[in-house]
Length: 87
Image 1: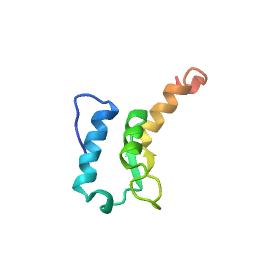
Image 2: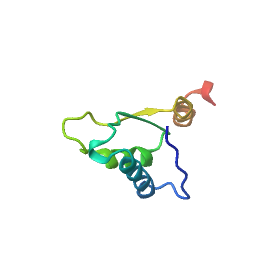
Image 3: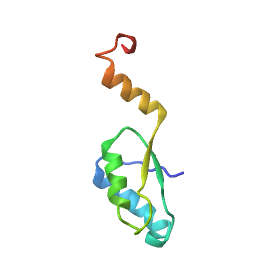
Image 4: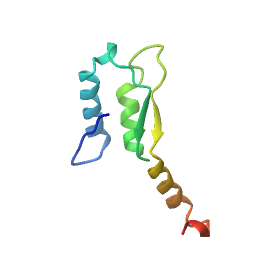
């Protein structure tokens, strides 16, 4: 499991951190990541795609697993206006 802390949460910063992780784990010939657990953040998901997109020919694309807590929060935030039980 890997964690990193940043002052800003933009994709350039996250790409830099993920690129360092990729370097530490062997680059193109290193670890093959299949899944990442992320928040419901388009910025994080974009950074993962850009860091690993097309890195190794013939390998599966890296996927995202959405944290169940963040998944629930997203549903509540997006649907609370249309469903009284979620208010």
